Image (cartoon, rainbow, N blue to C red; front, side, top):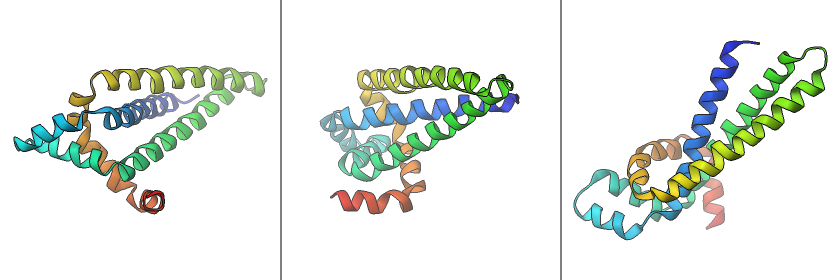
Length: 150
């Protein structure tokens, strides 16, 4: 088993936490508070408000990013499971996959969303720039979907 498999899983898990939190942040943040801060010329609040006002494209990019990192991490975890128990492939893979699924649901979905809902305004300010980068990175893939949904 290669050490960098674990590193990839950790990095993917961190990205998954970010995407899950960003999903909750921009769906629950107080638009009026962002608008007040925008009036004070707060650049990050302006960017966050822009994301909230045109939510279809950013949420599509966030969900695509989350799915990509979750599928990639699950694939790497499967490789880890295969390398752990070469004699009995199915047991090692099943155990690692179930354990990772539980980890993913609790630590990469539930907890980031709960944290994000509680601190939605401050996280919206901090997440605005990264979410904008994600939005433009996945633009070619999510724009047709976002437009079709309108």
